[in-house]
Image 1 (tube, rainbow, N blue to C red):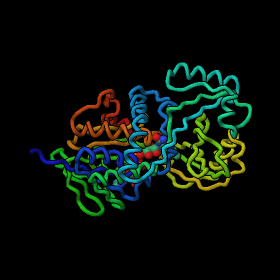
Image 2: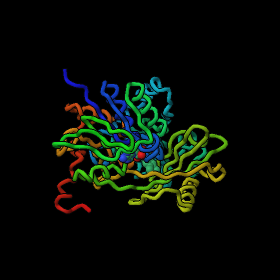
Image 3: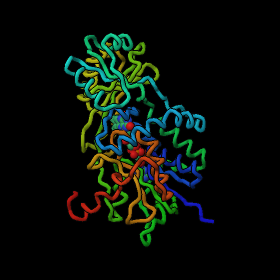
Image 4: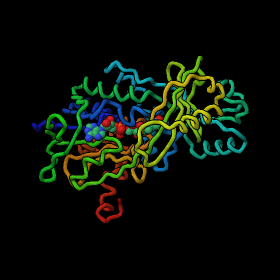
Length: 377
Ligand SMILES: Cc1cc2nc3c(=O)[nH]c(=O)nc-3n(C[C@H](O)[C@H](O)[C@H](O)COP(=O)(O)OP(=O)(O)OC[C@H]3O[C@@H](n4cnc5c(N)ncnc54)[C@H](O)[C@@H]3O)c2cc1C
């Protein structure tokens, strides 16, 4: 009988936690190592939109993966709630992309036809009937009933605690400091606490993932793209569906809260939210929902989207080192892609493939030859 494999996942964000759950459910001995708290990175800062159609992915493989992932969530969230008792706050009221003038309405209608994705056109009358708090004079909207949204920190916890319920070990406040490799095979992970012996290591450390690879002579280029979100609270609910405009999104959350986002600042790894960003986000939001001016300011926060040079995630094993895998670089859609990422990577780690998705475009060593040729950095 073959020995049960030991897997160490570095990172307790949505990606590491989702994979931890999938592997533990399959009977693997899994340890998730998180240097801080669960969802303390980008996963706790996200808006939680699972917007597979609105995001309009250019890469066909990523588009397919996004839709497959989004469609897994309603049942998956139910399953996670049963196991962990944590409610990830699934909202199925759909997404609206409204038009401000005739030209925008024509463009959106053409987009809807060309995309051939789920979605219907709402007239100005239907729009103001469904969402009376929206500003007057809008010329219609695309309504997408399939798009959903969640509370991302809760989703991450639901994955992690469900993984624990399935036998995974969660090590919080524990930093992975190096990966031990011998004869091109993974031996284990040195942490700020114990040494964890294992056959397989998955790097899911968000935008800082590459740090652990440098001593091994491997690259995984990732850039932080800072994003800020503002939360306001209103006396009565102002929005049923999520508003997904080109300039801004406004996401209704429980307790009459609206999450307004987001800025996008490439290469900025600073913490904190600038006053200028708050002013810009709120004034743009008030153009869509004037009543937002009377809302209570609750809080604002920032996070860092992990972006690869081609904008695609890294999913799969490194050819150079047996047992070393990456699940990182999900940029602005890691919450959306988390369900499918876990399934794809779990199959890859077993040496099997998942029908319908080709992982070649996501190979983690796709920039390695450029490093060797001196093209990167
Ligand atoms: C403002 C904003 C809005 C967003 N909105 C959305 C959205 O609506 N929908 C969507 O799908 N996506 C959204 N995203 C993107 C999404 O948040 C990310 O793609 C996703 O969270 C990445 O998850 P992750 O697990 O890879 O990284 P992270 O959440 O950053 O997790 C990585 C974890 O690894 C830990 N770690 C790192 N190094 C080590 C180490 N050496 N040892 C131990 N632990 C380590 C970190 O502490 C961290 O907790 C948004 C992001 C931002 C910033």
